[in-house]
Length: 165
Image (cartoon, rainbow, N blue to C red; front, side):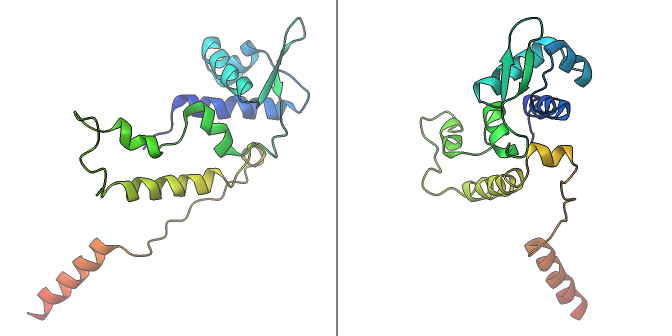
């Protein structure tokens, strides 16, 4: 599972603007230099973020890009959507039909629940945080919780059965 470079760089551009402050602007070359990105890539990302209402642009000598929203209200999930979209959506199955027009597992899919569960987990995390949370380093360190590991349970049962013989 991967997040795209566009999503990563889009978040970095927003963080750079947010650190500058509301009402303050930065030029494409300033963001490019600060983030180590090409100017053309920054321009492309800022165009997406402008069309999505996250940044505003001003032309002229003192122009540039500034936040169009308070970073406290910019939810990461909402920012990622125009930059790359969801990993799994209803259209996912339509795009992965193989050589046929429809997937052979359209009515009995063993994978759809897995992809849906993963998407829900991602949505839960990126829906919990804002750009301001990223700036303030308020992201929780993840803890891995195994509620039920079927393979481990079966292996343990097999070991117990073998040791009793």
